[in-house]
Image (cartoon, rainbow over all chains, first blue to last red):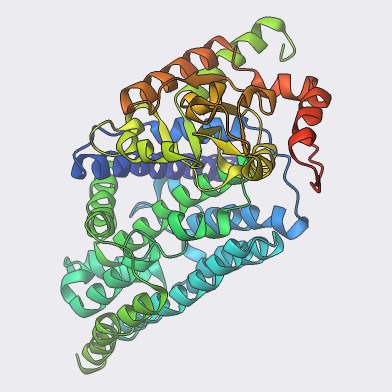
Amino acid sequence: MELILNILGAIATVILAFVVGMTYGGIVRKITARVQNRKGPPWYQNFIDAYKLYSKSTAIHHGWMHRMGPAFLMVTSVVTLMFIPVLNDGGWFENLTFKGDLIFLLYLMVLGALGMALGAGQTGNPNSAIGVTRGLSQMVGFEIPWVMALVALMIQYKTTSITGLMEVQQESGTWLMFSSPFAFIAAVLAMLGMFRYSPFDIVGAPSELASGPVSENGGKYLFTMMSSGSIYAFVKLTLYVDLFMGGADNLIILVVKTFTLYMIPVLYGIVSPRYRTEQAVKFFWGWPLFFGLLAILYAVIF
Amino acid sequence: MINDKNTQKLVDVIQNWARKHSIWVLAYGTGCGAIEIPPTMTSRYDAERLGVRGAATPRQADVLLITGYLTTKTLKRVIRVYEQMQDPKYVIGFGSCTINGGMYYDSYNTIKVLDKYLPVDVYINGCMPRPEAVLAGFGKLQELIAAGKADGAKKYKENLDWYRENQKRIIPNWVMPDYNW
């Protein structure tokens, strides 16, 4: 009985992540449109796009790795989702919350991108290859401040588990973004790269790279990528809320917190043009790295 | 139940509604018509509110927008782009040049009637058509899709021999991969 409930909870989590992620995507398109003085598509436009992509025929075949690429993305998103506590007390969304830790999560979070890189490589499209090299360089950029922020948290609170860090926040009553501010700043700056909005949308770059690694994928492939991207956005936002903003007691608080956090990369992106690859890497190895070092010093000293 | 006729009809209605409201356009900017696309997409006319947005590659696109005249040289590329697109796909002929040659009616190196080489679903008349006309054309395409009448791709497959004959008359060195859709 418990097993069935757990499976149902996992399915509910995936559906929740999908719906919330897609809705956020639609709202972002609306906000972008309003900033550019347009009316913009309705908030549910992403659902229509996804359904249309799913109903398109997909007669593209470049080999097995190409087929596996989107599947890698989807599997990574869902598995990562399973390891992240959605709510503080678990409840319906308990999943595998208590069995993973941050170091494991760090490895898991790059798996999808690597699978996608292999898949894009097999298409033989030069745009895909350039997009992949750009994406991996950018990842080298933002992973460093992100890992440093997490290491600072691990040193400061002497635990590598996400639930451990959440308990620290519940016991002390202050969010980690206040009790270890430099780690939060480094993590938020790394988040700008993680979400790939401008100025860090160098991977997709529609005008130069014809959407990069995605360029040979249409129809159901694109649907898989789109939905896994939405789930993954929800995963990352929930992870940030869990780590730095004290988690969430119910879904409404979760949505408010994640949406507030999501607006940082989105609003910064709307008003920014695109960086070149080396500029992006330079950005992450500048101030974010500095704040990451500061966070570790702060953690060691206090 | 799934193979039931009425169920299929319902699925078609929902699918056509989704296709109608999500049109990803691959603008093939061959001629001067490409200049009318930016105002259609940006804040003044904002095609995105109708679900029309640009697609980067033929694999992702639903609509091939032929903006202006096609030279005999670009026709080959356009055919290749069209055949790489995934079903369901539509073609919009944009400007007078795609209808009857327009001001290039006596040119030696442009094709005059696009419909002989690719199945056109909607023509937008004008030289140049203004963004209002472009939006009206998209509106017409949406009507056709909703009614299930935008079946150019089907016609193309059925009459492939006729289309190939016309295409090969223009393109002497035919080195093209075969697509099995």
